[in-house]
Image (cartoon, rainbow, N blue to C red; front, top):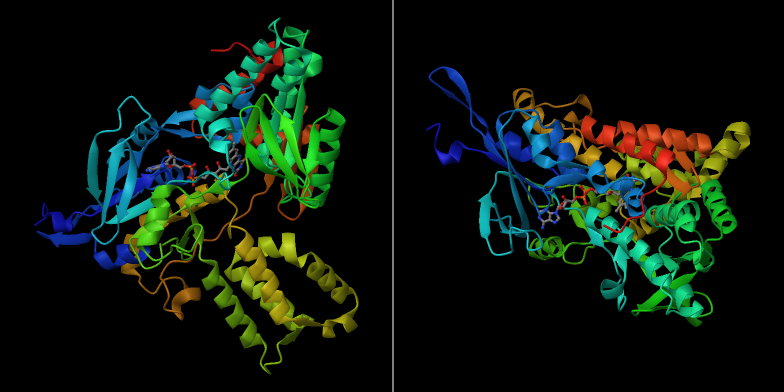
Length: 567
Ligand code: FAD
């Protein structure tokens, strides 16, 4: 009976994002008694992906009662925040990757890895269908299926082109290690080409025009790294063409780094202007051809053409086709990202978890809950709350949904925060009323515009760790099913829901200057923050090996400068 497959529970991890089925775990009974001894019946966990979410899940999963299989088209974890430094040779590509088998080996538990991509998830039969990665040396022919008890979908996202013609054919993306290596080679190619004697100055100007599309953190950091390379290192090697170099950053909105504090946005824009980086705000790219980018001014509608030598596209993330198909299958076709509940379970499938960039916590549900909290507080059904009650309600909501707090603080509640401060100073203002309908509308607008949690490594890693922790404690939860006191009455779940803890974010701006926005709206900008950035990123490395390599790459760059060989 112990060997019977029905007793074997497999945990399947797909990609690098891990998920766990809390209810599934507690319902399926992973432990059986035989001959008086408690024997562990292994659950099959399949993890799809070896990125931030999947690796964090793997690293934190400790319970040896799971049999884990990891499927991912790449057999390593990549430290993506340092990818922009790979594009200009500050850091070598191999310094930021860690073989996933190394991570698994150190766990001392049963984990298997398959270098393949999942092309179909079949939740009704608890199966995933995979094929070997077409772009690797393994070829694209071999297909296999794996069954699971728990599926962790952590496949991340792909670059979003908004279906702009010519982007896929002509632009570079900055998503994977290979992308960063390709960009590094292309920059050097541009300099070598521009140095050929047969070219006109007009052609040299075009070839050395580097265009970055997207003023988010990745686009800005890349532009800053590129600027450092073309100002600090390449002029010494290519003195004849150095005056032809130009960097342009195109942003469809009004500001770069719009998700950061205004002080950081302003500092970054001023710095880029001082550095000679041409910032074109309100510029929407409508087409990319082999030598030109066509843009449309958002306000005037005027069309322009920009000749370029290299274009890097960094305008956010889109859904992977396999996730889109899965969403169609499970009735989420109208959504942009795979929706989960606050326990990271895919809606309707208790044993399928989705984490990281490929998923989002269902906003509709969160909004419904918020409405209920409001209506309970609004006893007389007036649609309005006085400031005192409002504060209580906001406190309650933020306690339940810490993610909301982030958005409220950053986006909507700036004014309300100010009102609250005034109210404390002037008790008369306590009577000021706030329109609940307007407030929830504003909240849902923020909601519909963006992923409820930001698509960052920080969120993905915390989700992976949360899920692993839940799986680690599932046995304990079976023994004590009443769960945490707070949730005892609700009957919703015996685990606490996922809570994101925002630890702050960095925006490296080049020239050894970085901006940081830390919890409590604490903003720090400049050279000292760059040292904070060095220490945080060194400490966040996934292994001592990569930590050593990254720090020595920084040292090498300080002493010898960046390497411009085209290899
Ligand atoms: P990923 O890390 O993308 O991992 C996805 C995994 O799924 C990969 O292993 C992939 O190979 C695998 N996979 C893909 N398709 C399949 C398939 N069909 N089957 C199985 N597996 C599959 N975030 C920050 O917090 N701070 C930063 O400074 C920061 N800087 C960034 C800089 C750059 C250049 C980029 C691109 C991103 C940056 N991010 C940063 C964002 C961060 O990298 C992502 O939010 C994070 O990688 C998301 O983690 P994930 O596990 O969901 O996806």
